[in-house]
Image 1 (tube, rainbow, N blue to C red):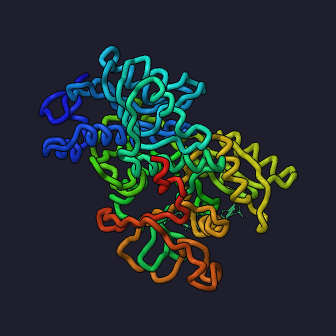
Image 2 (cartoon, rainbow, N blue to C red):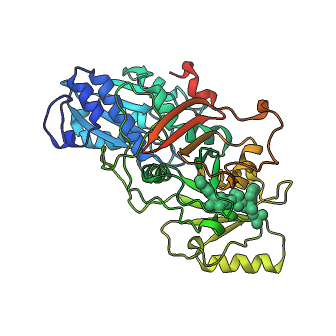
Image 3 (cartoon, rainbow, N blue to C red):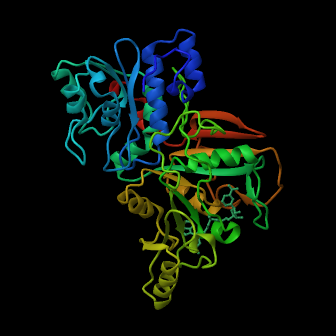
Length: 438
Ligand SMILES: NC(=O)c1ccc[n+]([C@@H]2O[C@H](COP(=O)([O-])OP(=O)(O)OC[C@H]3O[C@@H](n4cnc5c(N)ncnc54)[C@H](OP(=O)(O)O)[C@@H]3O)[C@@H](O)[C@H]2O)c1
């Protein structure tokens, strides 16, 4: 498969992000175009590579023709560079590799990518960002330079680092990056006083929410949401890559609407892949008739409670297990419920790097109170409920003063049909802004 950026024909052209194509036609640089393509490939692999980072790679030969491209495959399988190199074959010689993370230099489950790049005869490598793992950062670059390869670092670094927020958090803490997501009315309610919440948001926002689910490793709710809504917590949006335009700094995970048609072909998509579903349920009292306990949903469900050592708990655990549900116990917090920090430790140990908390007010409050929310994605619908369930906590809980509120940094505001999506960081990892990392 070959494609000269800016040409009007070719199989590859059909799968290019529209805005990137426009930029090329208006004279954009090959570097900018090719890195935008690599970032799109990385975004398309989100949620399928953990605990490895989702990385994209594009190889362009001396006449500006794309000769290979790829994204990280499932954990234990190939990284992005070998996928792109295999496609390029001998055409990688003297070519330029665009890659969203520095090639690895260590033997893990796969051999070092930097060695493969050198062996293929690539002479120039353009890297978005160094590895967030301080023990690794810079070594892949050094290895390439030692072999005489020209290396430039920094193109597309903002998007690349945002895409790797989960990986960077997991590397630093062995816990997942936590995104609190809810759909609320303008008066901040996520359900009526009777618990009705379907549907506060409109179809575009719901499609966006399914797209986000498709790109995270796990989704978490509390037993209250299971009782009230009987959710399936599956992603019903087919796996779509998120196109990244040249020079763009938006967050391809949260800040955009999932396109209704694939804008970027998923190179290794597993349509049946589902995020892990996690339910916090102290005493395992969620209904056995719920969808999550039915054993009929694709993917896995994990219920986390606090084992009190009673025969009742063991019996409820066995009942859930019969429905294909895995049950785990962690230590209690001060309220006797599973301590959310321990839940994150448990999920981190299973390689979950990004967790979407879709809970009701009780679960959201637990994560905010523990200071464990990294990002917020709030869909605000143009309606006023006038009472009912707040998005987080209760009228009687929370800080006394606004100084105790979680103010978001790096905010974005996007229209999703009639609804407004507001995203922002509660805790922005320093790694995202650390210019020294290139
Ligand atoms: N609009 C939206 O975006 C949205 C999203 C989700 C839910 N909702 C609505 O929210 C309402 C349900 O609210 P909710 O607050 O009951 O739901 P929730 O926060 O999902 O579940 C709360 C329950 O989770 C269990 N839990 C276990 N460990 C916990 C922990 N560490 N911290 C907090 N809770 C823990 C508790 O029950 P145990 O003590 O028995 O374990 C608790 O009562 C429903 O009306 C639903 O429709 C709306």
